[in-house]
Image (cartoon, helix red, strand yellow):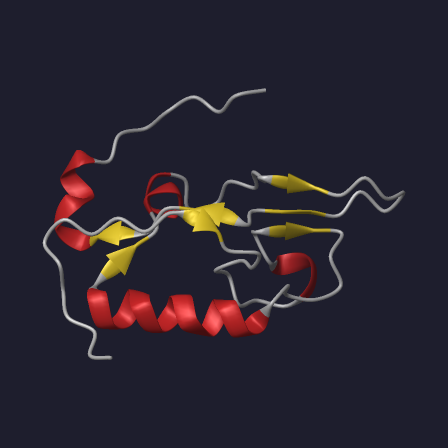
Length: 102
């Protein structure tokens, strides 16, 4: 399958991985996690980002924000940002800040 740019591409899903590749406590997409979840999915998403010129609008608007879409029910309280919506770079001017829900 050849990957080509689609002028209106937005990808959204529960990816079960994070985009930040940093390990340990410095990973902005994970808290109390020991490792990056599902590195295979992360590699595929990184490939899509590169081949299709995709950006993460959340990280664009909030580059240092620790906010999570998954919180484990275990006693460790592991949390991560597994859900995100990569979109094409040309859509960057349409990205607007939002207020996070409680």
